[in-house]
Length: 301
Length: 288
Image (cartoon, rainbow over the protein chains, first blue to last red):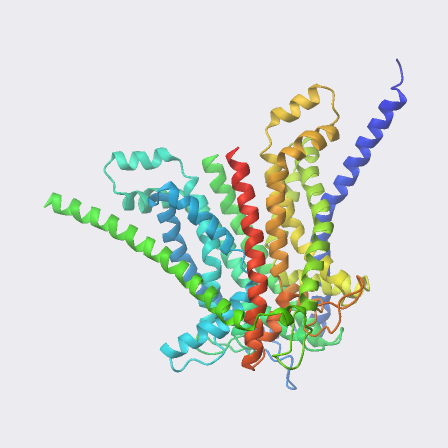
């Protein structure tokens, strides 16, 4: 029986072929990354041939679509951070409170109902939230704050917070649930109330898990597009006043692609520079989140 | 003194629980109010001619047929493209690479890469689609370009959820099959994949529902709000419901806002039903 039979060789060949095909599938992920970085870097280099890097980061105006062009990213960054901050102010404290309440207080039956509801709500498309922000929340807020303009940073910020809330709650709840029961029991045995146990034992123990969720949520808020495009307006202004219109990086990209911009023009390149900035920002946030997640997993697995 | 302090602590505890339950109820209420406001607005406009009509300059005559068909075709195409490739990648990473690259950094780099891909904003995938599919592959602003862009966006999502499902399959199943002389692929095909299928499907359905609701990447690859015909090939121009909704919301006329609400009343129940199906599937499977 020196040589393997023909049938066996057929098997070996098939095994090899299948493994090869599956490896190709896995390779798609690497190719996707290379393609994304390649596309962004290529156009970004073309952009910086025309516009000095210094003015890109220090110019206080962003007006590539006007006759007098300025290419300073600060107004778009300020718009993005303003709306993201409002969203996080809405989503984080309430998300954490609801997660604590679900994980530490609620009976299992309530959890069983609420958790799937949260996941289903997380599936509402962002364009629907854009509708909410522009046509329902802004008019409502205008009743409370008479000075509020039709397009503003406040309403999309709040709505984005509501959008992120179910998702942030779900992630924080997962982190709290991963904390071993012994810790809680030890705290109870020392006479702590549930509140003390939650905030002085369970949350500190789950802290890196919650932080990971927080950074993911920020990354998601920065990359969120439709709500801000619909409800925040299209004026890139360097402002931290939430009552005024604001433009985010994502909204600018949509604004340009809705017009008819020729490939190769400087307006076309700006889209990729902004895309690159978005990419780098979210990449950093994801890496930080990944770091905290790993630390959390190491602690409890 | 001491008892009063303890009493105070217990009150704090109760107060917090009441407050956070109220917060939970309030958040649910806000979402419910917003949803019912859209549905109330949308149902007045929703009728058969709205579903089977084409876009129009006049809000009362406009319909969603092209965008409805476009969204359906996109969802189908994305399933056919991403599902095999995504699950294939997950199988390779989970069932082959773990042995081939055991202990080396390759696997960790692959993992980190896929996590990061999943975290890239959808609009950046739109930029990728604009250059790679619309221009370099010269597909133009077509259904194919839109479907490929969404497929790229969903690929990491499907890989991650499929890997989790594969990881949940007990090692003993693989060992039994291999010990009986099955090859690695026979083991995967006949034992691992069937066991992981509910989990893989859950992830895939959630991903599809996400793709169906995406507007930003499609706007970038040139989905139109005015398509006066149904797509007849992969290379024809296309529309999608979220893009149509966006276009109608952005118009100043109130009539179009009613149209947007009506289109949302079509899209949202479908997506929520998909998500519910996925979550039901997972819960059923987890209990076993």
